[in-house]
Every structure is written in structure tokens, then in C-alpha cells.
Image (cartoon, rainbow, N blue to C red; front, side):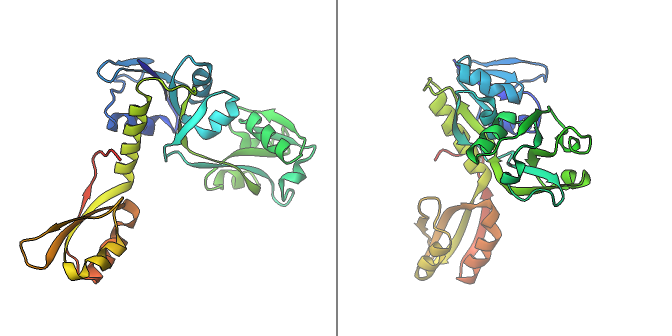
Length: 279
């Protein structure tokens, strides 16, 4: 059986569980379950702390897992990223008292608090900077005010929490992270199927189907607006000189594409959700 590590809690857990459910795998019925066997799909799920997943996978104890790219790189594990999963996106940045720091070079010799000390250490080393790292498991924003550190390195979304502590971000991002599928570097049975199914879920999440009718003489103009994932599907209609067209388009672009299609003469424009896909 393919052994898969899944986040048991936190920001990664809910969407990871939803993606696996959409991909046709059995989830846990009780939030306290630590192991779930899905005999039909020949997989075994292990629900673990997100920070521990890369360690288990990298050791070879488990085949694959879902965790954050930041957690993978900070673990020092031999696990490798297979692909990004497009959710739980975040940016990892330095922050310090307003006006004190301008770039990573200004961190020479200072104290930096972070929950990701290995990741920060590697980034500083790449820039030739030596600093004292203070490892904290959470709430690093308070470290400067409490005198534990001179600067922090943390996940930043809006920056509102940092500003509330009198801090501002500076320098280039250390890392742009998201949820990722990781493996121990092997190619166990079931991995290709898992990846194909997750890819299908991402397509179904990000794309919709657009159907419309149009005069054949205007077909090229319409297809230039939305040519589909690979190409448009075109079928003749009973009405002479007209065709029916089906294309996949990105969900975020749907209304702009519908407007543009209507402008070139498309009629009966219908948008449908994609429940599942294999690309």
C-alpha cells in the first residue's frame, strides 16, 4: 500500500483533506483517527503534525506526504518536492522595527527570532550574513518588543500583525511557499495515480467549461479569445452555417471571456463546473 502523510490540523489540513476526498480517497470519519486504511485505493493515510511530515517521508518510513514548502525546506529532510498544490500560499519575510533595517545585509550580528531557523540560516549564509538565531515555536512578532530579538523572520500575509507590534517588512522575500506534495525520492506503486488524481482536482478547481453557439464565419475570432486547454471542440449545428463550441477556461477569467465572446457574436453562452478531470 502507498503510505501517505496528511496534516492532522492547521491551515493545511482542511484543504488537503478536501482535495483527497475529491480525488476519490477515503478520509477519516473521526478527527481523532491517526491512521486510515483505504483498501479500495490501496493507500494508507497517517495523520501527523505538518512540521513532522517531511521528516517521516524523508526517512523512508512513509512514501509521500502533503505539507508546506517552508516546512519541507526547514526540516533538513531528504524528502523532495513533487509538485505544488496551489493552496496555503504564503510569503516568508524579514521584519524589524520601523526604519532600522533596509536589507538582509543589515542583519549582520543581530538576533533574529523565527520558527524556521534552518531556512533563515541557509538564506543568511547565501548572502554572507552571520546572525544569532532565536528559535520560537510561535508568536515571533512579540520577540522584538520583549527584548528577545532585534528582528524576526516569519510568514507574512497582510502584515497587519507585524505593524501592530511596531514592525515592518524589509528586503526581498526569503521564500514563497504553498502546500506541496512531497516524496522520499522513490517511485512506489500508486504514486503516479495519486499525482494524476490531484492534478485533476486542481484542474477542476481552477477551470470551467464554456459552451456557446456561433456562426462558422466568426469561429476564428471566437477561438482566438478562448482556445481551450488544448484546442476547442467544434460541432456542426442543425442550423446552416452555425457551430457549437466547447472550451475549458480559467475560472477567474470566465466573465471577461463571456463578454468578449458575446461581442464577436456568440450566443447561448453557458458555463459549467468541472467535477473531476484527468489531463
